[in-house]
Image 1 (tube, helix red, strand yellow):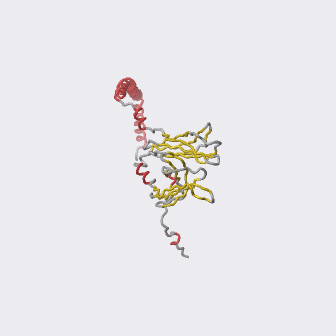
Image 2 (tube, rainbow, N blue to C red):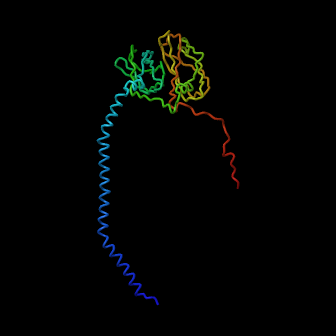
Image 3 (tube, helix red, strand yellow):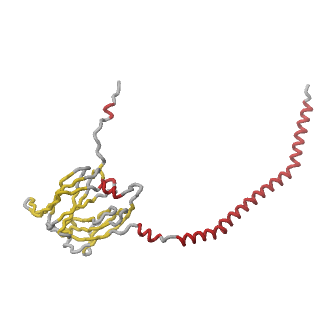
Length: 306
């Protein structure tokens, strides 16, 4: 038979010896642990002190020397920024024409000298201490000699001189990531032709003599426009003698349309006519969606079986 007493005695002796050894080694273990802790803590403290001295003291003088060298060799950026920034809108000519019913037409020829800057603004005309109501205007990049108008403004007397005032001027640089070549972009969307341009002063309309401008407008672009606006400028020699506008609704791509514009009131004497396009091609809402060919309705090809 196995002797359970002897086995239990052996287990107790083994446990006793292990416990006695741990009791003897515990002070030494504590000292080793504390020493290890202090060594690690001292190393971390030394690393912190060294990093502080290296960054805050040693590198301070090195960075100052590098900064002084950069400043000494740098280029003055102010002329560069001024050269690349948007230049102001140029006013070429401003005037007004009195009508017969205590109204006046105001105009101003302006120019955007920036080839890659687009500008939106509000403008109004000032004359004799009176100001017209502000209207919204824009200039496309590089758009020169554009005529801004305000027509049929009630006035007490015919203005002799007028001044255009621009407010809320906001410049936007053309994003080259979206439009890599703005000139080609604009040519593709502003390719209009004006043919058979004519102006008559003695047109009879129900017994009233009026002036009449006519021309054939052709949209040579691949884009349709909802309501493109065109400014008609009458000149006598080099002087502007009349301005008006016309809106052409729903102008399709490739469409040619005959346009007639009547001039009422004072009929100016003119020997040349200019037609200007006023379309903000950087505003996607001015374009009509492309018209596609009619296709079969998919629903007509679906049959539900009983």
